[in-house]
Image (cartoon, rainbow, N blue to C red):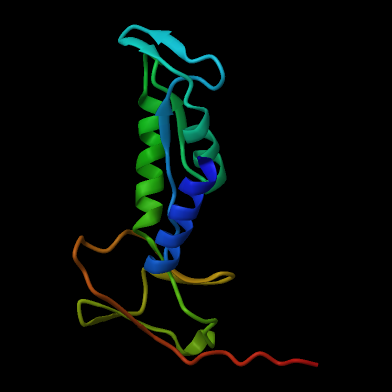
Length: 140
């Protein structure tokens, strides 16, 4: 079952050209757990997928879920702040527009894998346009 979930996430990531992760707030691995709100079965498959995809993991039986909420909010922000490019650009040629307005600052070019990393996520529903010259690889 974990392979099916991971395959789904890989397809989503390829289609969206952005990482896809799964986070799991489930019963403890192997044993499950009993907490103040009830009993939970083991969440082994979800834990395996979350680990493999870089998601957050927490026990549903924890009295304080503050740490996992913080982890989830960080993952969400990272997911809306990083935009993968289709090819490696020539760095000096990269131009970013958000909703038709050129942005010369507030972002960083990442080369491996190629992506734009925003200091703060753009507003929901924004249109990002990235133009660049594709770097040519040299084979010796």
